[in-house]
Structure formats: C-alpha cells, structure tokens
Length: 354
Image (cartoon, rainbow, N blue to C red; front, top):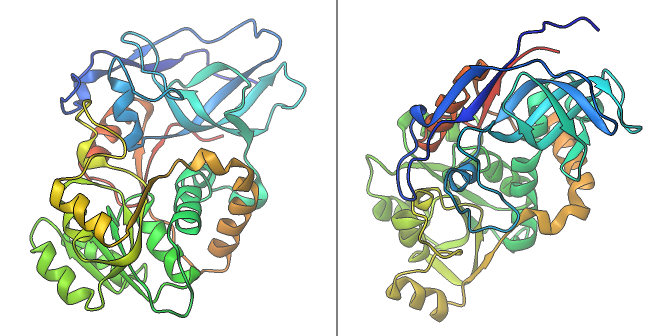
C-alpha cells in the first residue's frame, strides 16, 4: 500500500499545573519520522479519528492518582482513545485493512503500535462506515451510560421514576437521558449550559425538561420540573450543581457517579469527592446510594452492551450527537473546548480518511 512518507504528531509541550486550566499552548504539533522496519508483534496504523475526554485532564498532571492511568510526559507524543486503519501487520490477529480502536492510540498520523488489552477490531456490523461511533455511542461513552444506569441507577420500569442528568448535552449525558427512557424512566430532566443545548435535549433527544444552569436558578427549576423529587441522578459534573440535585433526591434514591468535570482542575481531591456536611447528611438520612462507578469493572458485559447500543441506534430509538474538529493539529484545541463545554455530544477529532 502506497502512503505518504510525511508524518506529524501532537506532543505535550507543558503542564497547566495541578489546578490550572488547560490551554492550547500546553500542546504542540510537529513533524516526525514516518515509522519503518516494523518489529514482530506490532502494527503500522494510520489514525482516522481521535477521542478527547474529561478524564484526560488528570493525565496532564505529574500524578494521575489512578493506578490504571499514566500521566503524559512533557516532550512526548500524547495518546488516548482513537480509531485507526491497519496498513501493515506483524501480528497474527490483525491484517492490513482492519479497522482497530484503542484506548492508547498516539496522537500521530502514522504510528507503530503494540497490540495489548486496550486494542480491539472495530466491527463494521455495528458501526458501518461511521468509525467514530467506536469511541462514542458504540464505545466507552455508550457503555458507561448503559452500564452505569443498569448497575447503579435502580431503574424500575412502570414506577414513573425521575432521572436528572448533569452535563446532559455531553458524550455520556446525551446518551444517558435517552437510555433512561428506553429502560423505563418516566421523567427525564437534563442540566446543561446553553439555550441551544437545552432546545436540542427536549426537541431532538426526548428529554422532558432542560435547565440552563448559567442563566436559570437550578434549585427553582428542579423544584418545578421534579414535583415528586429525584429518584436517579446521573452525575457528570459534581460541585454546586450536584449539591443542588442531591437536596431534591428522594429516600432510597441512587446517584450514578459518571464524572466530576467541575473538579478536574483540582488535583487535591478524593474520589468520590467529599461532600459538604449538610449534603453528606442528606445522603445519609435519605439512604441515597453514591458509590464509585468504573465501567471497566463490567468488561465482561461489553460485547452484549455494544450490540444493544448498535441495535437501538439502528432501530432509531436514540440519536447520536457528535462535535467534529478537523485536523490532528487541532486536537489540543478540541480538548480545551470540550473541557469548557464547547461540544455537543461526543467530541471527535477527524484526522484522516481510510
């Protein structure tokens, strides 16, 4: 297969500091050698798309405080979730032409990669030619939403439960609200940061109510939107918004701890984050379940979950939203935008076509 010999990559130029806000200047794009002399067991791949996600903020620090997640190194190529085309293979399980997805794909156009437990083939029967779905709705965000609700939500169909989702227009939130409805929630309320996102949630994704936390009084809007209280809270943000939701939750209700993006610029934190005394007392008094959720715990359920997500999409039971940034050199900018709420649905960087 004939390919261009030019190559480029994104490196970590600097760290924003343990509690700093990430800037585009923390990343650099540079030319780099085209990989040659492929060793046994490795693949030569061409990156098609990359995923930027909130968890990456901790990888910008010298310590991630998570044993399964290594920090990025200054001056080295950044890596994360992505989809790539296999150009050359010296591994028995992969052939040229295969599409693969990985959780540690370099932010680089052409790369030599080592096959590991974070690699898998992208099943065209599930995603078709929409390869970015493999790192979105038919990937980790979709599985996180589905399995989080299944294992931590306590959904009981037919009981007209109310679910509130913060970060509702993001990668997981936009899916979680739709999945909640499919699985039996009677009333779904989303919290997000713009009027356009609010309209999208209610007019396109089937949310009953959407609250703009930047322009509306969240406490008053929740009181009106959830007259019977809140039974399930899909928490993507933490902080003040979550405190407000928790104070509206019913006895024996459930919190799905998906993310805490409002706190990701603060290295000195516990996880799950500690609550203020009055909020913690509410959790205790109302027997609200608030347990750590790590989707990798349920890896044995991934194959069935991916098939279910793909089936729902094919049947038109839920819609997928993506924000696509063009160009490898703009990956850092896409990450910065996503961290400040610039995305609708999954933030994707389109790097190249197959």
